[in-house]
Amino acid sequence: MIESGIYFGMGEDEYHAIPALSNSGVKQILCSTMNFWASTSWLNPEWEEEESKFMDLGKAYHTRIVEGKETFYSRYAPALVPDDFPSALRTAEDLRNALPDGVKKGGNKTELAARILDHIPDAQIWDLMVEEYQAKHEGKEFLSQNLIKKIEIAAAMIEKHPVLCKAFSGGYPEVSIVWNCRDTGVPMKARLDYLKRQAIVDLKTFSNPFNKPVDRAIAYAVASYKLHIQVAVYHEAVEEAKRMLNEAEVAGVKAMQSILFGEFDPYWIGQFANSEQHEFLFVFQQTGIAPVARGWKFPRHLTYDIGKIAVAEAKRRFKEKLEKFGKDPWVDEAGIQEFDDHDFPAFLSE
Image (cartoon, rainbow, N blue to C red; front, side):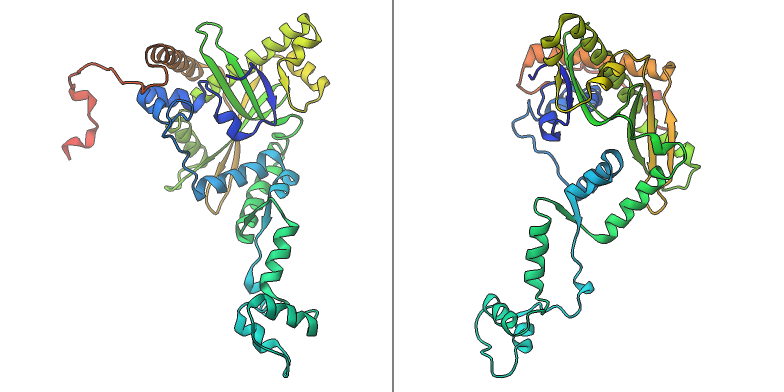
């Protein structure tokens, strides 16, 4: 377990490895305790993160919106498109045919390429172009130009919006907060998309395959993905972060240094610690060819209270199973039950 505190710029893998209960963990444990154990890397030795193309593309999109254009292009670059260079020499046969008459035409592609450059210095040799391009963008992930264009259109829907353009500015992206619940002692963690002095901002995509009015589709997404639980966890995280900062300020410089990690502005930290109750803003963006963006605040009303109750129940189950089973599989010990007619969906009789 790493130290409780506020982490700026913590790597995603490092965050996921922290043995603590998170927003996604709360949802898993409410499904079943075994679901939580099986999907948790620090408990299940056979766990493997399912890195899919979809998830990788989601990371790219998230980076561009939340962390900004400069960060995005420091990590990603457009892939070369062969069709953009129709005269490029690609195959060994292309290279041989390009050599002037009287020049030796035997050998492998590397030898042929060197011979061509001796006679045609400005020749476009595809393998060398790719090698040079990759060296220029070393360490970056390559995305298709078409995909980058789509990501830029999605970013424009937010950055050119008269209000949402301010959502991801004035604060810090990807802020990780680690703490122990004061009531239960359960270790907790949260990774906030964007933390402002007085607001938590979270970017969410939603699909709308049936072309519902956008706001109705968003409300459906909130219910389907139980986003009220996320709101409750993140509010607790921010409140605990402020508490840690205010207690450290009284204790002295060393105490403050023990809870703050990464690069940050001390003046901003002071403003954050003394701010009023934080608001929670979701920035929703529709997937597909029409990336409509809408902003929705999540107030601390009944639905939020339902989220807090769910989090409290998840903490209870977490503590109970961790004490009983440790790192062994968390057996779901629910007793035998009896169906009631109201348990079944209406389509059962169809």
